[in-house]
Amino acid sequence: MRSQDWLLLAILSVLWGATYFFIAVAQPEVPPFTLVLGRVGIAALVLVPLVFLLGHRLPAGREVWGLFVVQAMINNIIPFTLMVYGQQRIASGLAAVLNATTPLFTLIVARLFAGDPLTFNKLLGVLLGVAGVAMLMGPEALVANASSVIGMLCLLGGALSYGFSAQWMRRLRHIPPLVSSATQLTCSAAMLLPIAALADRFWLLPAPSAPVVGAVLGLAVFSTALAYIVFFRINATAGPSNVMLVTLLVPVTATALGVLVLGEDLKLNQIAGALVIASGLIVIDGRLLARFRR
Image (cartoon, rainbow, N blue to C red; front, top):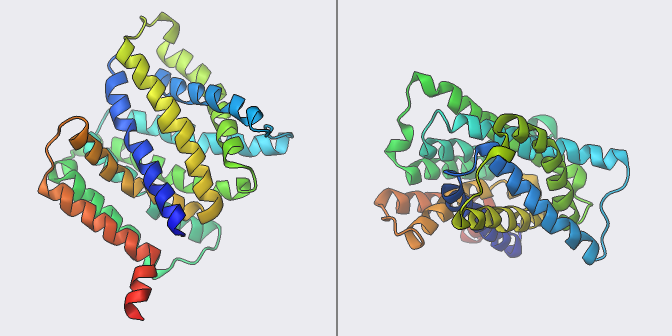
């Protein structure tokens, strides 16, 4: 990865780290599937006009749209649904730890289905990153009983789905990031609409308050529309395994936002976890270690 890719990865982690703040504000008034639909639907409404304003066009042909339908399913519909169901059964801290296994699943899927080499640096770095996330969330994240096993399996299933989506994106790397983002979100919104209608009956919900409207817009515009442009840009230049490293950084940025914006206390385990995650990313990058050996 180039220095520019690492910078974009840090920006993406901030955009996705803010997701927790926006959801915390919106969730009391907006049901889960309706919130997800608002997220992808508004983001699509923002990006599709930009595609045409900047001189691009949406993909043409059933084959390309078929690729994006699959991508929308395995990168949005399936993991979002599994996470919504899983987080009803387990603590959010444990959910964050399980979601941070995404880079590990990405490496395994890449090795099994794409024949990518599983280098020692990548494996060690990802394992360090997962350990750092566990330290970051603290011992309370490990409190689970037998009834939460299904919830944990759901979160792991979502992380596995992201691993497959990272490989599927290889087929879309030739498409500009803005076009990829707009097309995937359009497919996601179209497929989520009947799901949200059946599950939440959103037309019967009372009008949301102003802070909730602002949170949904922030979730859609910043944590989805802008985030997906950055996401597909990193994927085009650095590859799917590297872009999924962002899930190791998201808990760090979410913790930092909690301290800076919400006034939460910064604990020793959070500092230690962030340092371990940083060491894992350094091992994956490899350049500092190679310079040290030389």
